Image 1 (spheres, helix red, strand yellow):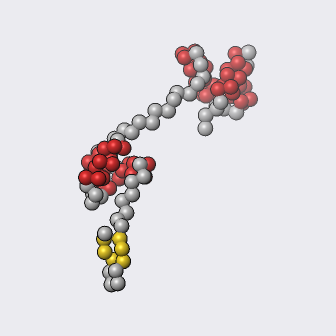
Image 2 (cartoon, rainbow, N blue to C red):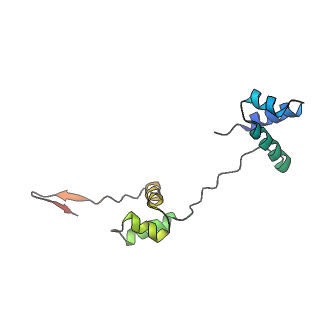
Image 3 (cartoon, rainbow, N blue to C red):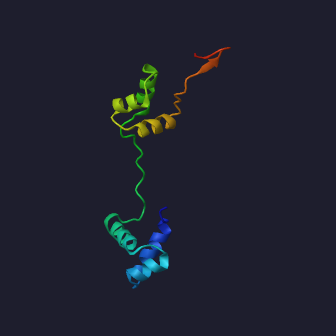
Length: 116
């Protein structure tokens, strides 16, 4: 979990008031490299905010996946993985993320189970 911007600013101010990086790291409960990184970031960008998360889908676009599942209802996850150029786990997560179920609906007759 990342530290708050207030804590980062306080740590940098503490260090700039004449304390060593080691002292600052110990007081604020972070590593020495973290203090150095915060100093570098403040010098380069002027602030200590985190970069916004970029959550783009690398290989499996949700609309393309939905269209593929609709056009190929019998396709296995392995076949989907080959189609999208990724692994089975990526397909599984994409299906779950988009709330697409692959379970076949069945109904029971007297002597056997039939696919609907």
